[in-house]
Image (cartoon, rainbow, N blue to C red):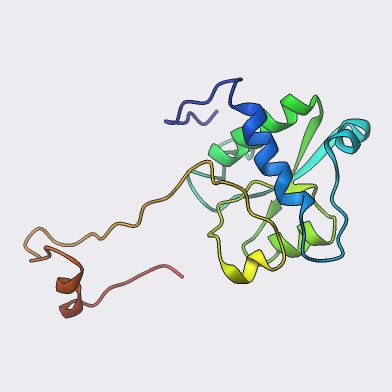
Length: 156
């Protein structure tokens, strides 16, 4: 099981659940959101999670979903008293799967953008991912202005 460095306790779960469920209740589209009562009646929550974003979501050595987002999703399902079914999503299909009702809600690593906010409702993030710059020891980088003289590689 993935161990998180952030303190999570049963007392945080309702807030995390409320935050995640809010993302499914306030669409700017015609999609219908599922309520906690409907999830409980259904008995299962289908949760969209990414599996290519270590440490947030990945496949463990046994082929099972693991990571910080997975643990958050399990806590939400436990709080609801429902079984969890994971739907492996990608950055490209996560919002369409949510809006079309293929997943009940998402627990992905996702950057908040104005464009996405036109389609889904964000909640207060439960974590953040800092951006860092790595260079050779002898690189003379004291601040952002110094980066202009270097070729910088970034992921998309």
